[in-house]
Image 1 (cartoon, rainbow, N blue to C red):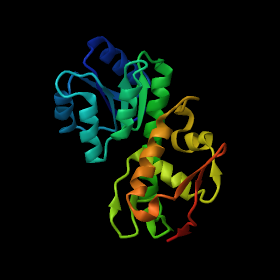
Image 2: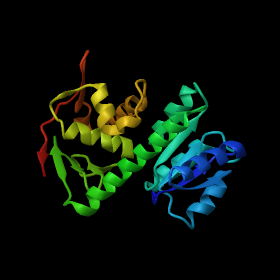
Image 3: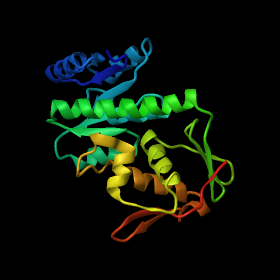
Image 4: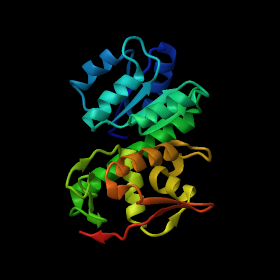
Length: 238
């Protein structure tokens, strides 16, 4: 029995019931919410390990709720979008969703993505709880793996989503090596990634923009034509 508690925010009663029922049968605790307001009342009294958000909701939409959850920083988000609606998927990832899934979806894929997000979240928590913090230094920057914190050369914190942090950690721990897209997908998204998964592309673009906000960050990740990506800086354990 999995101890994870999942909130399914979906205004369609039939879909909400089907998804919560599927999650319960797979051993999760799951509760459905029709609106963002219902979700707010739930999270006030219950720890939420994952929120599955539909974009089209009455009142506050799923993108707005995702943005609020990302500001809190403690609730992973799986965004559900209409089939073929690439704009909504990209916007959802841009504002910090951990993953997305298009309707109609295969129930097995939903469960696989839920488990992958929860596994990544637990792994990060386990590192923080059980291991001494690992800190990496590169080109004046500092990455604290235990605290999931990045500081630029001036010491200013740089806010990263969970996906962006996983991606940067993959680069830092494989510095000065050409990494192809499949490797990045495997290390950051695991078996939940599909062959045409674009989440890593969006997160890479967003990570590069955040690094480039400091003069020394623009050249840290270089595109290698036909090969992949190279983290150019030398990395030292701090």
